[in-house]
Amino acid sequence: MYIGIDAGTSGIKAVLVDEDQTVLATRTEALTSQSPHAGWSEQDPEAWWCALLAAIDALRDSHPRAVAAVRGIGLSGQQHGAVLLDGGGRVLRPCILWNDVRASAECAVFEQRFPDSRTVTGNIAMPGFTAPKLLWVARHEPEIFRATRHVLLPKAWLRYRLTGEMIEEMSDASGTLWLDVGRRQWSEAALAATGLPLAAMPALCEGTDRAGVLRRELVERWGMDAPPVLAGGAGDNAAGAVGLGAVRPGDAFVSLGTSGVVWATTDRFRPGPRAAIHAFCHAVPGMWHQMGVTLSAASSLAWWASVVGRSEAELLAELPEVIARPSGLLFLPYLSGERTPHNDAGIRGAFIGLERSTSRAQMTQAVLEGVAFSLRDALDGLAGAGSVLEQADVIGGGSRSATWLGILASVMGIRLHRLAHGEQGGAFGAARLARLAVTGEDVAAVCLPPERVETIAPDDALQAAYGTVLPRYRALYPALADFASVP
Image 1 (tube, rainbow, N blue to C red):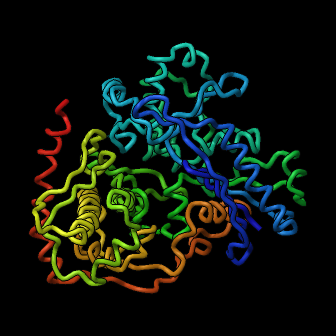
Image 2 (image 1 turned 90 degrees about the vertical axis):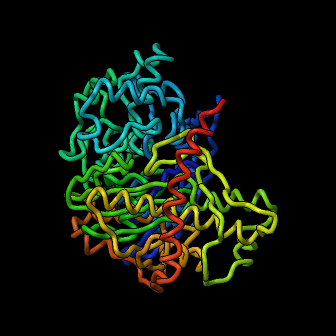
């Protein structure tokens, strides 16, 4: 038996998985975030701990014999957050989260101090990453910075509470801007640019490594037969990839969740910072991955539904299952800024081409198309960084819409595969990593992909039509950038 724990922004999810990789039980405990000022996003790490305890308590209560037999625990978590600890391991301030943008000015400072940053870390400095957050703390909360002796990412802090060990694995460490991603080791030059010593960093391991043993008092609390091993684990996207079996070079998926991701697994470090492509270590040894990210995917449809006072299902029902032609409108899905390819936190979205005869259904279709164009930008960014995709699995809430998948396949020009069980998420991937840490099995033998139940191919005529719309979509960004800069 294995437990996978996913420490997300909105909740802590725990899954109990047996030797056949069947999920026996799940439990999610909700979390809330605080925003003391515009653009800030914080959480109290103690709230994560209480939620984690409650989630596993619930698994123990519902499946006591299975929990007693647990041999390994895996951790997945939201990336980039900064948990600052003093010399005694006490939390000094609330964790600054991945979606906090207060450190925008510090990104330029970091790259100025560390000119090789993009080459070494594989990424543009963005305010969501960890290093700029520490520069912000040094500037605005100098007494806290002086007291800081350790910096941990969210799941590494949970590991510390579970085991007493300060250990982090490669995929999550890649999102700090302190990791030499190609060499899979901390960069002392990157740390120096932030005013931190190497001693402030946790030890590094692979996601499949053994990384601590559960504390005795927790073993007793949950009635376990023996102390389970903790795996290195993974950042949230890498854990999701492990759950999908995307662990071999060339494996790819598109996520139509709240945000959108185009993922490619690679066997080498391939940075693509010019197009804001992320290049991170994978959670499995000897592998890396690239990601293009759009910040408002399914959340664009949710926003539109809230504006017109209809459910998302009602809006989708107004559209034909098979789209015959483009909507005639353009929607720019920059509701929360954009990541790939623009790296622009200030850009904002728009509808273009409205007229008196425009219908709600046209506008809904335009929303789906705008997200698809944004994901096409991510796809082309990956191609520019060396990963040319011809097919991909598709996951996330948006993947349930046949209409959206038809649009997406034709805009992206690739085959998309709908999966039988594609919604297990990071917690299931974390449980797989727990098993690998315990058994030492071959990664490919354990991380099998779900069954593909449908393939959606591009429609030739629609693909050609969208090909004429795409340049117009891309031409609008500079005008929106100018508009967003107007006070």
